[in-house]
Length: 517
Ligand code: HEM
Image (cartoon, rainbow, N blue to C red; front, side, top):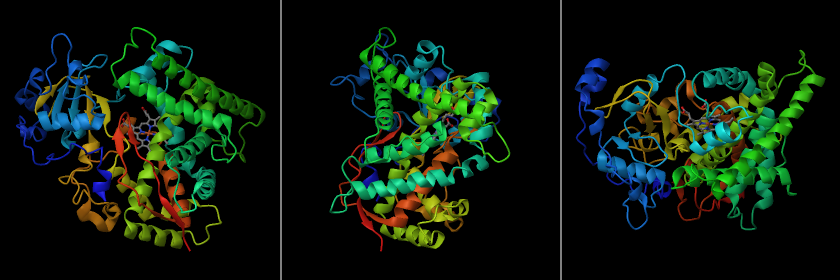
C-alpha cells in the first residue's frame, strides 16, 4: 500500500537509510550542553550548499541551470539531507533567513524542549505582510504573532479551544455536518459507484462547513445542492490565498519591492475571508448583547472568545486563523485516511465491525461516548497521518544556542524539523511502509515509535496546533459516518501527493463507493 502512497512525496527517498554521513560529536545528547557546545563543530562549517557571492543559492533553483530546479519542498529537503547529512544549512535564499533543516528526532527534541515561554515559529512572510503592513487596523493573528502578544492571545484561546468540554459541545453539530456530507456523497456518486474527479473539492466543502460552524457560529451551506454563493466564494478565496502564498513565499518574486499581481490576489482573497468573518462576528456580538449569558445558555467558542476579550477584532483574527489553518489540513487528513482504508480492505473490515458495534442505529445522532469508543478508527487516523503527514515539517526559531547534528547553531535560528521524513522511516517505525493502525493500540507495542519525537502531526509544546481537538472530532465524525454507510474501494493509479506549504493531493480522489448491506 505504501508504494501507492509514496509517489511524488517520496520520489527521492531511495537510500535514506543506506547513506552514511560523517556527523560530528555523536554523543552530544549524553553530554551536558556546555561540554557539547565546546565539542561541537562551528556554525560556519555546518554542511549545506554554498551560496555564491552574487546570487546566493537562488541560482540552484533556476530551470535548466540549477540542480534543485522544479523540486517540491519535500523532494528538495530529502535531496539536501541525502547530500549533506542530518543537519543542513540552507543560506542565501532571497527573502528568507538562513535555515537549518533537521531529520533526527534527537535534534527535534532538543529544539522543542528548549523553545522557552513564547516559542517562535516563522510565519509565511506574505501573510505577515498582509497583517502587519497592509491591514494595520486589524489584530494580528495567532499563527503570525510572536512573543508576549502571542502568549497573551494563545492563553485566552487555550482556555476556550483546548478544553475537552468546549469540544464535547460540538459533537452533535459536527456530526450533523458529517451526515449531510454522506448525503452529498450519495448525490455526487456516479452510476458505477465512482466519486467524481473533483471529489477533493467536496472534501474541502465538508471541512469548510465544519470549521466555520466553530469559527463563525453559522452553517455556511457549502454542502447544499443549490450553489451557495458565499460558501463557494469562501472556498475559492481560501484556495486562491494558498496558491498566492506558494507563489509569493516559495518561488522567486519581487513582491517585497513592488506590488505584484500575486500580492494583489492574496490581498483580495484575504480581504474577502476577513469580510465574511467580520459579518458573523458582528452578529455574535449582537447576540451576546440581546441574549446575555445565563445558566441555561451554553456559550459557543466564538462567544466565549468575544466575552473573554471584548474585542471583536480578536474574534475575527481567530476565525480567520481557524479557516486558513483548519480547512485544507483536515480535509487532506480525512481524505488520506479514506485512501489508506480503501487500499487495506482487512483494516476497513475492522473499522466496519467497530462501527456496527458502537453505532447500532445510524439514524441516531452521535454521542460523546460513541466518539470516545471508536478506538480503532482513531488509530486509523493516526496511522494515516503517519504514512503521509499533512504538515511535513515543524518550524521553530531556536530558543537558545544548541548543538544540532554535531554543530553549534545560534539562538534564534530558523529550523525546519522534517518529521514528515522520520515518521515514514523504518528505523523509527517498524514496518514503516505498511498501514498498521494496530501500532497505536495497546497490543501493538512492538510497532510503536522508537523515538517520541519521530512523529509530530500536530506539532509540540505551547505552540502546538490549537485546533487539534476540533480537527480530530471532525475527522472521527465524518469517517464514522462514511464507513458506517459505505465500503470504499480504490481502482485507480496510486494517489499523487506533493508538499508545497502543506501536503496536497495532486490526483483525482476517485473512490468507488458501495452501500453497505
Ligand atoms: C489534520 C488537521 C490538522 C493538522 C495536521 C494540523 C497541524 C498543525 C501543526 C503541525 C501546527 C504547528 C504546530 C507547532 O508549530 O508546534 C498547527 C498550528 C495551528 N493550527 Fe493546526 N492542524 C490541523 C487542523 C487545524 C484546525 C481544524 C484548526 C482550527 C480550529 C487549526 C488551527 C491551527 C492554528 C491557529 C495554529 C497556530 C497555533 C499557534 O501558532 O499558536 N489546525 N497545526
